[in-house]
Length: 471
Image 1 (cartoon, rainbow, N blue to C red):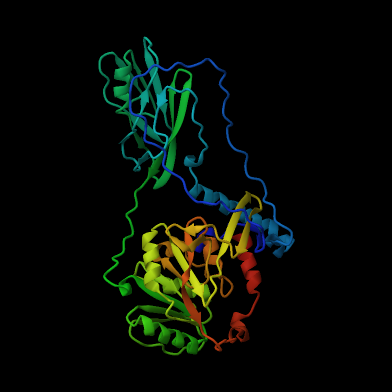
Image 2: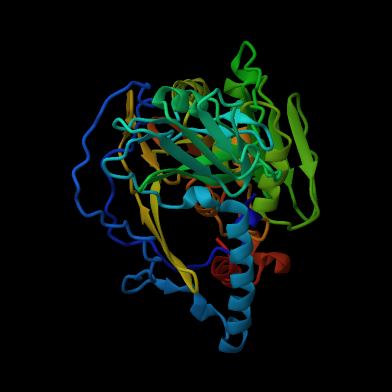
């Protein structure tokens, strides 16, 4: 949920920064572990330089001229105490999200040790064979290797004659044999089991032979059951339309009439926090009455919480469906690109995409977030009319489970078009397409918002408070 990132400090926000983008997003899996085979490599006697113990911590980010320094929105007397609370919250956040799996590891040079470098996962407190452990060394009269972990125990089978095992069932295991073949047979049966239950953490295993040492990660993770939706047989079982309204019944009823021109059986969910409410009725229409003036994001949370389909289409209450509002096409694109979480389109003739670059900065004051209107990364593979972005306008199709994980911060009453995508930065893949669109109602501008005392107040200052005390 958005509140989970409440204390991520952003020191500056700029919508006009010059941003340098990568031309592509990609990567690949490392190759499989080398199969066990006997060979006799030679190791030149060169001086080994120890790798750096760690990378230096990130320094403070640099805000461009004209950027908004959000910390300046607080009186100096309050700021020091606020930063102390933030520091405590940040440390708790790190305890929840970081583990030894974040440790920077270096591959040893000219090493005879074979071990898994990526992808070794175990369930908590469940013995699991460590794949690929082996020693490839020149002829010796005796071979001794050791393995050491900190959050679990190591075990192997009872050794055959001519071999010796010490520390079976302990955190440090030593295997010794005069036969390299026997040694590797014992290593092939070494298992790891964590000793403390944790749903997502890790351990580092140290693998040693003479003056050679390798360290590899062990991911300790409780598997999660997948969230699967029944797509059904038509678009009505795949998508729910959601919106939020406040004091705009003519607009929301006009929206509903336009929806029924094209999607007469699609479920529509309306969250309503008006002061004086009116009934909104009709088949496949759910109208939820909220306490007055709870705000836009509170209404979004309510509406999305009631969605039971794989996708929901978010629209503003003064939008209007047209022939270009092709929900089937949006679902097709999302299904073809399952890594996407949100897909936006045009409102009238404009797409309004934006890109976000977040510099983490130092721990004390936080980082810098740069928002660039119109910023796009590159086209979506297979769809040249679509581009990957960081955020889109309030006409988008979203995966229900992905959006619910991010959530909508109810502190934001009115100002927050970009907030959902800022909270979802790093967890939501977003794209926008130029060949799907929605209309906007003309001549129906309702300015009652500013005339209600409950919706007055320092909205911008409220946003500043959240941004300075949380992302």
